Image 1 (tube, helix red, strand yellow):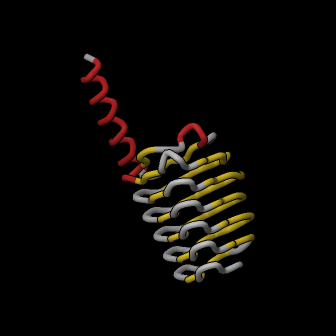
Image 2 (cartoon, rainbow, N blue to C red):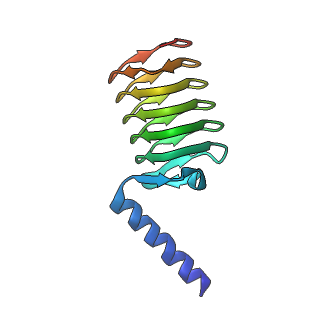
Length: 139
């Protein structure tokens, strides 16, 4: 009987994911790992201490990434790589890449299809769609 209920709950969860398309979570620290809507994945080592957290479909958040602050919104198809540090109000649009070791702080918006280079520091900035921020840059 338990197996049937478990299968039913999994199907219901998948239906909910398909219907809603993205997840909005208050007190996100309770929901910080595993598969999210549309096959998005957050590694179990990721730390999410954010009041309002959302992630679109098919995004990936790599190991040892941290999120803290009021607000984080990650679009669909985005890639947040290993060891990225995020604090403040962070918005990352669709198809963006934030490379290993980058630090985002304050009010930061990363545009669609933008690339933030390895070990870059981005503070209180708006990065345009399609922008390329080189390795080790400070903005």
